[in-house]
Length: 631
Image 1 (cartoon, rainbow, N blue to C red):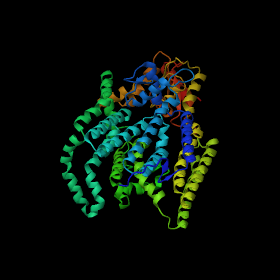
Image 2: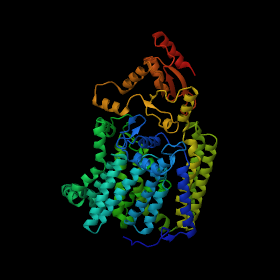
Image 3: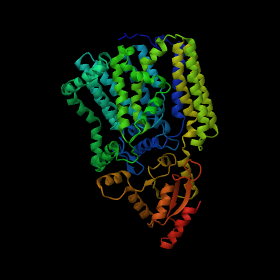
Image 4: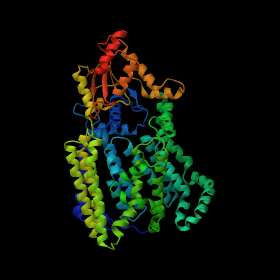
């Protein structure tokens, strides 16, 4: 392998000008600060972590954190724990409540910064320093990692711990002494356990499975380019024969006999403690994780094996044009010097994507932990393209640059006509012109990169591509984010409740799907749930012939409305109309809250109450009719 150079402040083999290094560092620090203090308010997924952290500090319930009025068991607690811990040190809201938008998102930003550093350290042990710098730069400027660096969910933490685990395993295999190897393996098991505590059980298919495949097939995969396609079958047969010996070796070489207990020690005590306090937790986790993997889960949909392919390319923007060659690089003779690390990174990317594609329940962010692996695959390819390629024809290079710019220009032009039809509620005013401005900035930055590339100013060209992506993302997050964050719905709900004269201490129940915690986090309006959803899930899981969960919720709603106490409920329009048509409980509609789409929609919120509704059958029927037609 090529020896490592000792240069600093370089991209490729060429040092960047000192003024550009200092300017880039200052710009990144300013952008990070602006992204954390500006941008949109927390989304409905983010606020689950933020509100859980706030209630943890208020109640002192660290083992079993609460979300609204129920224990939050469906996800591991590490993200909420970190937000709560940071919020002890940093100031809270102006009215004295712990946890702000900044403290909720700060752990994710720190996790992504650490991810970039780990990628750089890992790449330094795989490649020359010049290529390692490229890997770090690619990971720092990839859109997927940037997006979740300012997202208060668990994805950034999961990605960091997965990356750390991959790095420690590689360093253990590269160690020159047994004590150093054991030290790295111990940290590998700890990192894997922390990943489980961040978002289990995702680390098992994201880390443990690809590492197991790589370790078992390492010799066979490395030999394929030399032996050729004709002997691929022989290599496969030999790998099968090696299975039992390699499995025995795993218990000694990889320390499975002591590593697995260390791995379990990180997160299993929390699970046991929760299960002792909330006995239904095991049934809930079985439903939430195992049934989801088996496809017995709402929202599961088999097929669409290609689902993650465009997402994978989107995550590594603006470097996605080089991704096909990067995925093939481990098996190309041009990259033979880096074959072993490339195969390792290839397993890091390919195995989790195949596993996630085979699952019936899919979410775009499930494959985010493979993004650092993509950066490691891309680094040698980008180094070769930007710093080793010799232009044979400047004219052809200009035509290629012009073609790429034409494609980039066609995207916003198409969006100008498509976006108003797809998102009419959001595509207006400043959002439109901000989108035009940022599209122009992207074209300008990429045009400069193309010109510098043709003129053989490759380090400036490479830097311009990443800097353009980073700068435009940061600016768009701060400028367009508040407009597209769509935090108006929960605040409109709170405002309408106050306008309707609903007291802050009046019983107010969320009768829809998942409660929107922004009503509590931002609106300071206490919410109750119709029934503990996690107990309901566990009960439904145990009773194969029991009532449908929706019927159980509907029965609880009717019981509340038929009681003597005045109550208020919020639910979706479609559910409200179905409830009133079939069950006719004593209720009247107070108001609708538009969910964003223009005109009445099935998912608009409806607030109803039993206050002032007679409980006689005839009066109930009249009230129902008025409730459906009133405005």
